[in-house]
Amino acid sequence: MNTAVITTTPQADKGFYPTPESLGDMLLEGIDMDKVNNVLEPSVGKGNLVRCIAKKVRRSRYGNGRKMEVDCVEIDPYLRSIFQYEFGGQREEEYDDRLEVLKDKRKYDYEARAYRELSPEEEAECKLLAYERELLERVEARIVHDNFLSFDTRKRYSLIVMNPPFADGDAHLLRAIQMQERSGGKIRCILNAETLLNPYTDRRKLLKKKLEEYEAEVKIVENAFSTAERETDVTVAIIRIDIPEPERESEIYERLRKAAEIEETPPEDITDMTVTDFLAQIVSRFNVEVDAGLELIREYSSMKRYMLTSFDKEHSFGHTTLTLCVGEPSRLARGETPSVNAYIRLVRGKYWQALLSNKEFIGKLTSNLREKYYNMVNELADYDFTLYNIQQVSVQMNAEMGKGVEDTIVALFDKMTEEHSWYPECAKNVHYFNGWKTNKVHKINSKVILPTYGMFSSYSWDKETFNLYTAESTISDIEKVFEYLDGNMTANVDLHGVLQSAHDEGRTKNIPCKFFSVTLYKKGTMHIKFHNQQLVDRFNIYCARKKAWLPPNYGRTTYGEMTSEEKAVVDGFHGDGSAGAGAGAYQKILARKDYYLGEPMREVPLLASAT
Image (tube, rainbow, N blue to C red; front, side):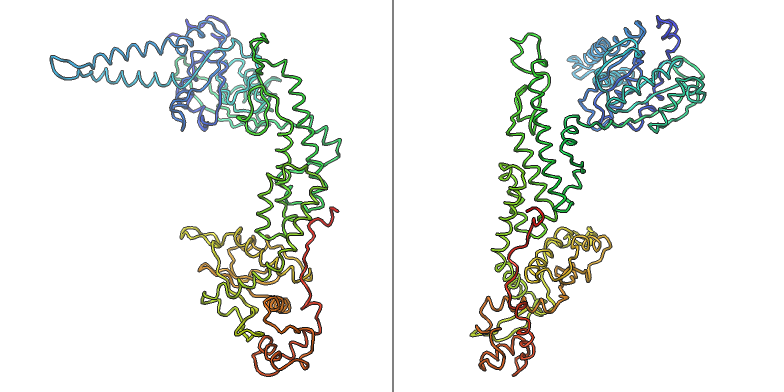
């Protein structure tokens, strides 16, 4: 086609250089069409770039059956008519008609008793027509305006693809940048390289500044139009710009937040705060978020009458052009005002969940109690997120912890002794002695071996040192039992940090915890070596007394005042069973009766700073 006679305006004749297919393909390199919602082509001409877009969509992962929406702008009326012919349905009908003719040629020949065959030329034509027909199916292209520089729309485009007139390409590219700055998006542009290489005008200087600001990628291509439909020896620049979506603050939320004088904390940091800081901020933040949402719902309710789907209110059925909903969109009928109570309940649940994920708040709970309270989030969503209600949950947690202390301590004792007595290595865990009115009872030694399940992956290809979550959960439950007995006498150790370091370094041996060190073996065992023998003794004494394995007056009378039968039990418990073997150790117990025979802590305050 002679391009010299297809333009009817000076602007088009001056700047119309149809994009060669190879250059269009180069322009779209790196674009993932599966992540593009729509496209703007602001100087479309006959539609060469639209065809390149169609090819790209066809090759995309989800291209089969997908149509890409492409809005186009073209200043020349005749070029618009050509574009309309190519992409408005007429060319598609011609393809269909010709394909139907070729299909008829293949019909069964009853005289020859065989299907007719097409000539090689006709077969090639058939494939080409089917391909071109498929390309047209991949785009839904339309002309939406005539002059891009006067194009005023509030529509947002994921991608602007452009080959603007060489003479004023800088103005066109600046306009595209201005559009994408509103909400973010990509720009791919073919520009006369002279525009960038010789920035002598204010407009070119501004464009250079914008390209630097957005770290645009520029690739110079020589002779790109030397074999094009309309030849020129101009050197072009392929420009790739990715403009991020601007960050916007909610005026409603910011106003309420400043009024409440709370600091903004990133959501990912909120569960790592101390309990004091956490409560000081999160209750206020809860109130601000609820108030902001309620104000938004009120504003929406007031605006609904201005946003009906029809000017004829009698036939709009109360539907609005904009719907505001609580939670999943499918849960709200179109145009319905969101339920205030449903919104408040959803926000309550979010904040209760954050509280029950706070490491300091739940850190003193055993894993089963943590899971229990975390599963209560839906129930707690019926209660306001206030300091009073938080305190009530804390009191309930403390009560449950105290009530279960005895059972928890004895359960760990059983786990370390008889529960795993069948496991060969666990035989070294215990020291046997003849108990009070009982034959061959036991206590734990300073080294304990426990079977572990799920600590290491069962897959041979998995090179992970150990499962961090499983290790922390298992070890923390053991630590909490000894915290009941220890009475906060031992310096705290950051178990998560210690295990994380060991995990990252690939260490599994002698990992230092608060009361003991652990060694983890892939064969499925955990070796525990206690640091404090006195704490182990207190653990043994507590459990042995609960099981009535020690004499009733153990700790109430001296060794010398005991009967021979009582002395025998003490000698077996504190020594090797020989006469007098336990006298010295028992004397030390009597010297520190408050420590060895005292009841364990039954409350571990969760919110001492919140009362």
